[in-house]
Amino acid sequence: METQNKSAFQKARNGVGLSQLRVHDLRHTYGQRLRDAGVSEEDRALLLGHADSGMPRHSAAATVAKLLEASNALLKTRDRTMVLRVANG
Image (tube, rainbow, N blue to C red):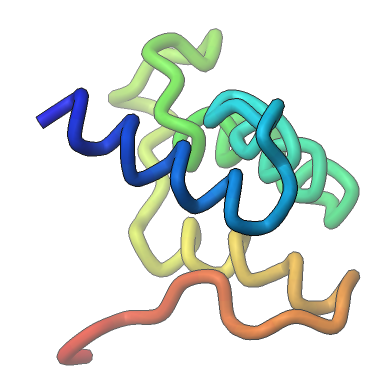
């Protein structure tokens, strides 16, 4: 599966002329845009899947709705389509 994903990513990035782009570069850009949009460090860590945001999970658990709101804050800073949306809800 990993090889298949890697191959698809390589094909996609080469197709748009970004052969040096890494998946990590996309994560970094997303994290920076969240920060620029004023999303809290805690919510950025959760959205990026960081194992340790520096705060105990039991006292800082964010709701899915709050995380969607934080991610969609990017829409207010750039003219983009919706980043995430709730399916069946």
